[in-house]
Length: 376
Image 1 (spheres, rainbow, N blue to C red):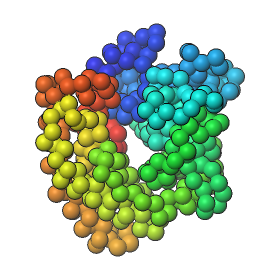
Image 2: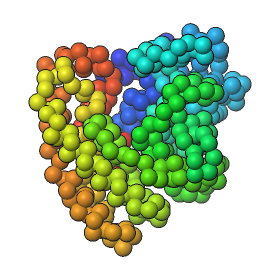
Image 3: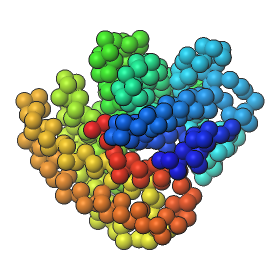
């Protein structure tokens, strides 16, 4: 994490910091975890400095954009107070696709805009900052971001609502109209996480907005197909399962057996990856950050049976949930296998590592010390 800080202009602070929202969300949580473990204020300060850099870089228009200022359109001083109210840019190297520019799938991956699943990771990071520092202003920023993302990415009405996968920087038009497979689930869980935090803080501005957004996201999530053979996707399901489990203990509704579905899908994903032969490939054929997303998610596997077993009375079909949680423990060896492979220096010389060095570095740190991100 110190290497990441140096390379991206965080510490020492550079004139043009390299900010990328997904990586930075995990990095903030990693620094918070290091602070909680060591009580070294350096890591807390790095987390806070990174939050500020993200807001002042990805909350504003790109230097090569003819537009200027906050992407929300707020005046300078008001934008300083509400840097997330217009969402946050991804941080891709190329400008977003213009209105009259033809869609090119390969090029789109390198073009800027907003991703919903990146925004939910930043909401989670802001909530963690608020929890660790005791400063409720970060929770307010998470609530404002949640409502901005929900308003910008959902469309339709009632039970027919859908979601766009990628939006323009100002949230005015979809860039990729299809729906992300796990975006509705991630939104539902993250909104509930923030609402719980707001309730602990005697309510925050925007709480009632969250209640309405949660109801709409629950409708979008209902009956969605979640199966995936992507290890990063499976890791995300494990993360969501851990949050659903903890929130159920705290009184959040179960959403009609959603936890059972998520655990079952995570089991299928872990089994598919373990049988895929991917772990036998050389480093140049593997994407570290995707594998490390799975290994980080596996960190909750030992916790799930304890949470369920100690709070048996609050779970519907608790016996099935406990059985699923115990089955997941069979895949724990994957965590060490993945970590040891990418800790090997020669494997980090492969282009698949060096081409994505920042995200790979941060995800490796998350896997090795997952408490900061997972909040466990």
